[in-house]
Amino acid sequence: MTTPNAWAAPRSAIVTGAGRGIGLAIARRLAQEGATVACFDLAGADDAAEQINASGGRALSFAVDVTDRSSIDAARAELNALVDPATILVNNAGIAPFTPFVAVSREDLDAVFAVNVRGVFDCCQAVLPDMVASGWGRIINIASSSAQTGSSMQTVYAASKGAVLAFTKSLAREVGARGITVNAVPPSFIDTPSLRSAEDLGHLGPGVEKLARSMPIQRVGEPEDIAAACAFLARDDAGFITGHVLGVNGGRVMG
Image (cartoon, rainbow, N blue to C red):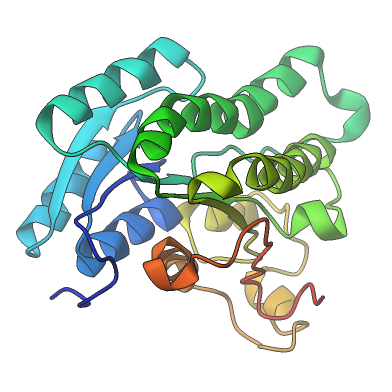
């Protein structure tokens, strides 16, 4: 079932890290809104596209490594040969290791920034020409509330997501006059396999549920909470919103 009138014209969307968790939920929701969704991921993209197609949406899958610009460019070219060029991009792919700061190596630093920052940069740079040609575009970058609060043993991760927030605001200023909006969504505790793995490894102190009860909305978020925010920011209705940080975080960060 689709939501009518999300867009005045048919839209194609790219969602990175669409194989599971938040990315999968975003891909499903955009398909429900009526977009053709390209699922980019190193693993799980085929299953994600199959799920979406089986539920009545339209999706394609691409094995993409966001740290490899040639992989991104090849997928974009293949997508453009199959459907209309993507004018919606959700940069969701990311990694979030926990490492004491004194133990972080240069290789660790480079690996996190390669995915979380350079991947966003390269995907935006690859897709922007299609948005400019269309005179319409929506870029949504998934950041993290850890960039706003700080996070123990995640200095590199939090720094990378802080870079995403600054990148979002700067790119929004540069491309707004061309009909393209650029916004960020920083989640807090969202019930994903990655979050539960961190909990199992003892990285989340008293546990996810107890941490969630410290927030005004006393529950763990669902991937669909983030997907709903992305769907709104991708619509025609959100055309006057850009450079905005839409915190979907249960009140963990306010303002």
